[in-house]
Length: 498
Image 1 (cartoon, rainbow, N blue to C red):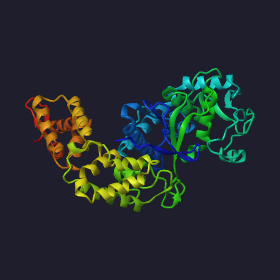
Image 2 (cartoon, helix red, strand yellow; image 1 turned 90 degrees about the horizontal axis):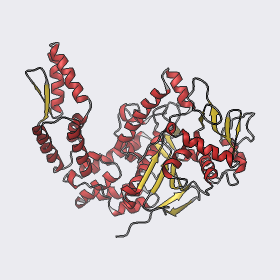
Image 3 (cartoon, rainbow, N blue to C red; image 1 turned 180 degrees about the vertical axis):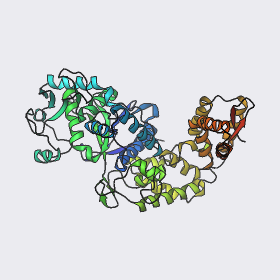
Image 4 (cartoon, one colour; image 1 turned 90 degrees about the vertical axis):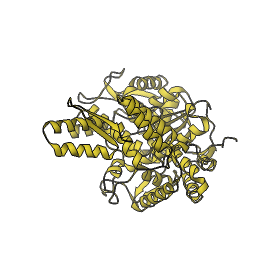
């Protein structure tokens, strides 16, 4: 059966085009990632989910080993400097803490880990190299410790956003400075004060501008030109426009990426999201607090609520939409009564692939899954489609079971009898209809770093004769399928209950 042709809407040409990779054996995609100064908001979740679906589709069409997906981490930025100073912590401490939460949130949304997640601070040398090329070719100039891109030196500047000069001036929030030759010129490098992060460069100690970071990281990992560049529609100008200017002028190429994809805006309950309106909400809050709609929302519900609207259309993020997505998921999962994890390969139905191959038509793919749940003979197909779209937890697939088993046996110093017990338990679940609660509790307990910590806390409680606390921890673990055994020498071992 032939592979369906992928068609995507290219912002650069304003048309839907058939995707033709530069090298089918190595499809390359870059998507702008987080600036790790604060938790990612729900608007940030949309490109994470959209381009994760595209990543999954490309892997399906071309083979997982033939697709490289780069999503960067911006860990040097004036917002980071300001937030670290405000909290009284180091910049490194802030970025590490924020990135850790980001990674947890993205995983909860069902996103695969990108092939690479490069950090801006690890690519300063590449940034300096690009800037030197731009100066040498007459597209940039140094002035007063700064280096700026000379916008008029690029004849087709503005091709992506298709804005007039006046519109670009209005939209760029132009900084007025005496060292700039033109109002539109933007910063590639700027000097750093003693209390700011900085690196040695031919222009003095300083730090990069925002736009040069993505040009450097995409060049380092994908080459001078690559297939797809993605992000939110708000990044078209000035960020993506300036990326194109830097990369094309530095490397003498006509394009930076052949296809530019952008997801639409998100508003909350009919209004633009902003802190002043009190409707600014983060992914973390939706997952872990009852701030929105009076309840916590599972990551799969958030993901489905996003996919029900075509990625290029604006989306209104409402409690009602989440409630409807939750009902959809529950209905679909109930239809999986006779499906076991061993049946779930994650290989999607061809009709779903065809829908997604038409410019990521997630709305149509979701409708197809809904119609299939009414057919008892389609249970396995429904499960595979849900897994492919990231709407079924990975642990309920063949591969997820295998990976979890490997994690468990590698993580703990298990005795042979314990491994046999766990394998028996594992195989029982793998050959039984999907249970979306029981298995997750057991796996989370066994693979969690805090299992040993819980045992140590219980030993301390026993040593201080705090029998109530000791019994509480024992009972808590027993409810998760973990049996503790206290030994005469004062140690405690554990095993999985049959």
